[in-house]
Image 1 (cartoon, rainbow, N blue to C red):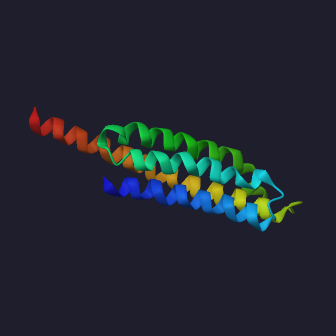
Image 2 (cartoon, helix red, strand yellow):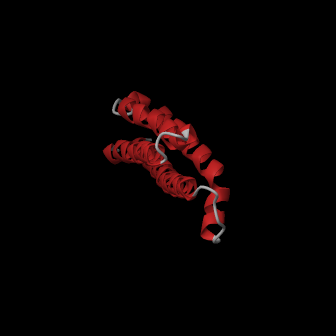
Length: 129
């Protein structure tokens, strides 16, 4: 399950980069532009901890909760952007949309990973029992 840790890291780095880009693109005026970075930082820390199999399961579950919060918080604005609504601050709309899409992709991959892990565990139990 090495790829899971890699996916954590990519998701975390992408959120941090999105937040930093928005912050510096707004000339440091908007601290709220860093919200994706605030979501991505714990994901990065947990991805490092997940290298230890002891922390993999809890790390993955916490990361999915973070991704779910990111998705829920940004879904409305993302739908608005897709629908063609104008934003007072287009950069914020794009940042929210990127956060939403990244979070949704991460959630889908994580749920798939949970399902595969459950199947693998079930097959191991059947073959040993």
